[in-house]
Image (tube, rainbow, N blue to C red; front, side):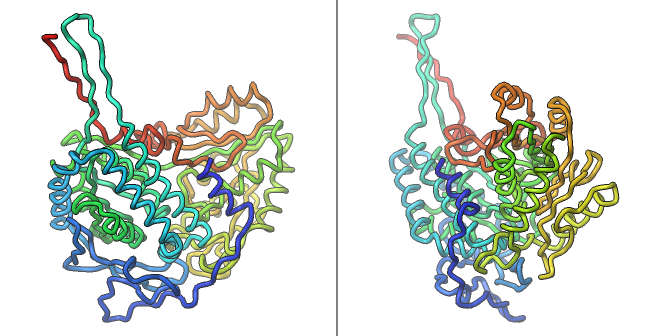
Length: 524
């Protein structure tokens, strides 16, 4: 599929990157920078906004917070630190806009989303540089994310015109049942830092296509991408109040999140993030019985059976594990390899890692592994490695902080991993690949399912009967069979168990923002 092709291209052939002419410069101690216009060469200042965007206007907040480059630790600039008053004002603006936006024809909504898509494509290189600057991911991956992100706007611009109802012939001759689909109202969109553009458009594209308005609270580590999207939405002609962005610091995130989940004018919550945070938001949303979509944590198993093509499995493992330095919710977290090919897989996996992976600044040519998002993330990977080694795992390659220092960590492969290790029972969210040996198919399935989450899973096999058995038995929402990259705008994204509620993308994604209304038409 188109999206998988774009993501796969990063691993298939590394295209030369245009090295930026100058690095992002730290803000001076006394400066009130709300943009970093002196960013990489060629980056237009009008995309680098630092104020909140509410009701079609750029509004400052009483305070600001710094945004840092995870590769260097330098301050990129400062952004409006919105609190409770700003959050309530954004909700009110979205509610006021909803009264008219819900009545806009589907053709016009479709046209506006398409214009937004076109502007993203026209500015794709600059948007990608913003992602690399604030998240650290390699520029090639950032370019892939922007294409993926824009495709959601294109997809939902088309789905806007395919919101169908039904006519039901009832048992009574003089009655007909009509089924209407109507927008739920204001949607609060809370997004993570690891895909700062795509996680917004995947939600917002569906919401706006359905006739909803939105208030976006981006992650505090990566607010610039959300604000750049606001600038383009405004240029596309999205009416004031339909798309609002309220960045906030980590210290204010809790209170802003609570406002969005409890304000009676908000009808829908869509959140991507950790399971722990999702549970808190669900608790807040329960008091007003809001519609919720949750895409939460994963602990993806990657199973390789004896019948698998080992080279194909290694290629899939590389793509699944090390995209964004292992910082994705669908990354393979637990590698389960059958005894007959275990040694061969570990050997070839290590060789592929040593040959293909290069740690460095995301703007540097040839970099495949950028920094982790912050020191806390590095400490977690380090903790998982130390715990595994203490319990008997062997470090095949990597295993420590990278010589570059800061937030960089070596891509790490562990053999002889066991199911009692933290790297098997917890989501690492980093460049760590622990490999467990198993004997029987039933054993692998039991290990894979012995967790309370179930977002994605992967397995490699050439046995058709086994493929059907395992695909049906794995307790996850998405499965890659002989494939390490599964995300696509055309296909439903979501998990089971404590990995979330609802689906995003695909033809099903728009249903999350629609209410079904039954009308009984009598007297016929």
